Length: 338
Ligand code: PEP
Ligand code: MN
Image 1: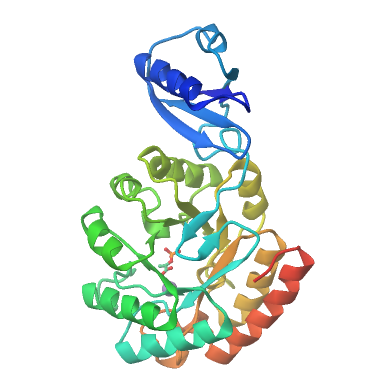
Image 2 (image 1 turned 60 degrees about the vertical axis):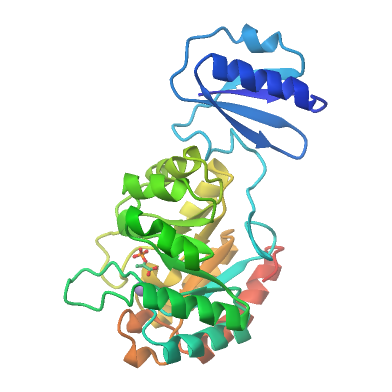
């Protein structure tokens, strides 16, 4: 893919003329308006062209190829880090965003209690699955739309935004009607029809790294969402499969700076699914923030012993509150705030 870089003082007319030219050549233009410069990406299989076509146009500074296989997700395309905004909460800025709540919405009581404790401790987003991707078809599958309703109500009551998983393209509109952020789970990272469907909405998407996926595959999955028109993608490292058995997955901490280097998209870490054990959630969380993560998504349950899923990795309310205060100190050390 080629990108056309406009001069800092290029006007709207000049940018418009470049966009028209891009379309005439049979490409789809993707505009990225930086603080200083405007960049136009040329997506798709258009006609062969001489870069001089653009270099000769007024306001054009340069025409450069993007080397990476992911284009719109790359830092080559967009130098400034993307900040995903949702009514008041900004993900990818200086402030670290904490998402917390139970693995699944189990009941009104359970979720309202969870929402209260995570809000009190300083989280800004409430998590809770209504559609659960379970290994066994006999395990609790989630409450479906009823769960979404409870989640929305609990979020509104406590002033928290809400994130929840969508498993099927057919459910995207339903989930988007209740949630502030739609989660694409690890198992669905390469479900291309789902990626296309969440690419066609504008609500933020939390895209989790697949169990066996490379960073490049994660960024290519993000590219599906971006190229379908949704710029609001948040990436999530949640551990990958390895031979190690003392942890549920192997948390790839280095993926955080690797992704920061390759992409402008925000990246958060899920220390709960990455480790699988309550005692490992705090150290994994602290190291994620030290490594430069923009946020965390942590499982917290009012009574983890009674959880219908992932109880062993869910924090008790008081453990979560204690972790939040420890996180503040790490955040300070890396010039961030919580
Ligand atoms: C979850 O966050 O509820 C979940 C199922 O995570 P993952 O897709 O990372 O396994
Ligand atoms: Mn879970």
